Length: 315
Image (cartoon, one colour):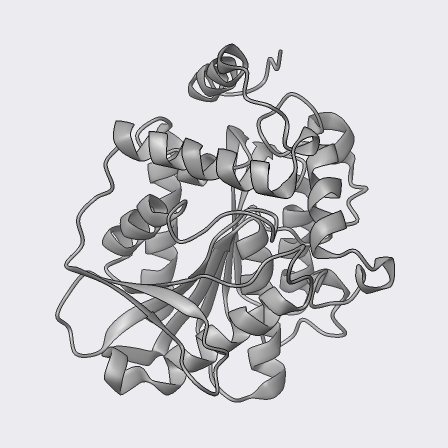
């Protein structure tokens, strides 16, 4: 068993073993989706989602991909700051429901309107479908600021894991297309390179929660079945031709995570391109801890760090 994780994380790992939760790599796509949905539903029973002022399910409509979104409002402000949020799940599972508590908590903690995006996933819709939906959703939010009662000058993209990958890619696309502006990006243990190979794959690739080295391969086979596309910057953002002129970035990493090293490297890459970067690593944490609200103290702290970063950027 791991000997370097936080005691609260160890308790979660022990409970997972006790319940006999199967490894993702041993499941079919649908079985993995069902498992993740059921686990999230059980967690919501133990830790009821916090209230927000209003929740609305809608879609981006014609011209923007008809992408389903869920809007969380925390105030009646006419021009509220807004977070466009992309859930994790390896671009294969995860949903508006699995990340409902996270979305609510992040909206409340930041005081923002939050738009959670239900993008298409593999294997039914492989790369770049998720990227297209992610960009269309952010573009729609920016172009409908008055109707959505948000301030387009305070628009941030945010996501965890695969969602962090999408947030990073959308920031690059928005810069290149110049169709709308993103003022900040919050990348929570993001996938920066599906091909892996960093030292943390060997160090934390087994026994440290749901995301193991083999799990990343399972995701890649479904989201990026064509090996020739795995180095495309829209899948692997560190291969983009330039990282200059990107919005300020907060990158959160977990010490005991296979993705830790690529998160660190991306922070360094952005800094080298003169992008304002804040990198915070949480010791003893594993992949997924941002959603362990009510179970792990650092989950709530990570939300607070995100709120303080956005507040500082928008000042």
